[in-house]
Every structure is written in C-alpha cells, then in structure tokens.
Image (cartoon, rainbow, N blue to C red; front, side):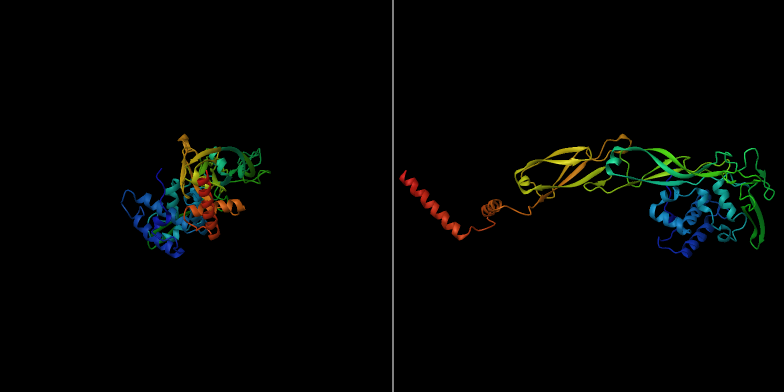
Length: 386
C-alpha cells in the first residue's frame, strides 16, 4: 500500500492555516477533481484523498492528533468511517450537481449502493513504556486493555435471550432515511442514519438485561503482546481485531500498541547505534590504558593508546541496538573525555608542577634554582674526590 501523503500538502495549505483557509482550499480542489466534473482516470482517488485530508484537518481534535503523531495518530484512533462522521459534505459541495452530496463521499469509501455495510468497531491505542534495555532485548508481556466486546448474554443482538430484534418500520431495515431535494443545480439526494433505530435497521422490543440492548459491554481484556528486539521509539504494533467490538455483523476494530522508549542516563540512540561519553584520567590518556566501558549487555574493554586527546571516539562493533528482523546489531560509539581532578594532595601537586616545568609551561622558583646549582656543585666536588 502506498504511503499516505501529508494532509496539508494534499490541500496545498500551510500548517498554520485556519479553518476558513482549509475549507476554501478543499472546495476549490474538490470542484476540480470531483468524479462528476472530471474525466481523468485518477479523479476519484484524488477526490478521496482530498476529502480525507479535509475531514481530519477541519476537526480540531483530529487535527491535533495528526499534528502530534502524524498518520499513526489518526489510524490508531479512528476507523475510516469515523473520520467522516460529522462532516457536512452536503453544504460543502452544494452546487456540484448529480450525486455531489455528502452521501457520495461515503459511497466512494464504503461501497455505496444504498445501505452501507455494517459499521466497523473503533480502533484503539495503547501506550507501552520501555527502558532501552527492554527495547534491546525484546519483551513479552500482558496488557490490560479497556474495550467494548460483544455481549456474552445476547451474543451481540441486543435482544433478551429467547427474543429477536424486529425490522425497523421507519427505514424498513436499511438503517438510513433518504431525502431528495430539488435545487437550482439539480436534485440533491442525502441519506442520514435512521433516528428510530439509530442506523441498525432493527428495533429491540425486549432488550438484553446485561447490555441494555446495546449488544456490547465494557470489559478490561488481558492481551498478550510480543515486542521484538530493536524496536524504536514511536513504532507501533497492530493487533487486528483487538479493538472495540462493532454492531451486529460488523468487524471489530484494531488495537495499536505504541512504543515509548524512556531516556537512558548513559546511552543516546541513533537508529541502531548507541553513543556514550566515557571520562578517563589525564594519566590514562597520556600513558595509555585499557578502560572498561558499560554496554547494554555487560561490560567491554577499549584500548586507549598513549597520547589520546579528549573527544576521541572509539567504536565497538555489534555492541549497539539489535536491528529488526535479525539483521545484526549496530555499534557502540564511546567518546572519551579527559577528567580533570578536582582536588590534589601536596605530593600530586608537586609532581604536576615539576611536569609543568619540564614541559616549559612554568618557570622553576628562584630558591629552587639556587638549590639546584648548589646540588650540582656538590655533585661535582664528590666526583673530583672520587
């Protein structure tokens, strides 16, 4: 399936566009690509794309979720039919002529031809927080998901056991009431959910005592999930049919388990690689040393050569995050930082001062110079006597 385009790009508006600008852009483009107005073979698909973008961006709640999570935020919260619920396409597309009303939008997306198929259950989202170690090793766990399920007492019919729903006399079982209206632009035909049966096509004279005729009940369902090693922050697992139950004969929605990986105190992640900073002493950097570093699975050693400068990066191959689908693992990049001691003993201070003098960074004090000359004379006398 091709990746969906950005909704703002589809409508040709900026992300800061207001409601009026979004509506104007949609009407202009919808008029251009409406299948009743365009003979282009791709007109219907383009019109669907425009209508979906408008349905999301014209609704403040849907737009906020899209701005924050992108298409994943919309797919995890709404079925496709839910996207269009409440959008008055009839007013938006008034004047297009034959079949341009709101009902034609649903016909394109959900099959048309009079009564639409059974409503699909709502998709659900469940967030799981993981440590970096859990993301690296994978995790199998159970989660408690609040959702609606088919009533076990009436098996989803809504009717008291031993009774049956009856066909709605208002819509004659279609679930919809159709209204035709003549306008200067032609006849506009619209369909709305039947107010008597709520779009079900049936009425219940003796409702089920457990679900009060709804056919569904609220439950907390324990669901087992398996998170693969190497999963990334923001990725989601799709569990088909584990969302809310639908009405009679409808298909249950899906459950989207969204992964949130908590920040790690030591490691930063970049795709499958890990980056860390390792403090080493001045003597380790100067003289060279074998230094132990932590990894996600135990400890490892790096060989720091003599004369290493602060900021030098060492790479440990295969010590990063595992790649999905068993494609090996990334690397661990260790950036060394020379640590300056905060306090020194008098001897340590004297040694460093002597080293500074040796490097020419500091002059020897006058009294030490005189002492040094005296020591030299004494050594020469001793040599002459011997």
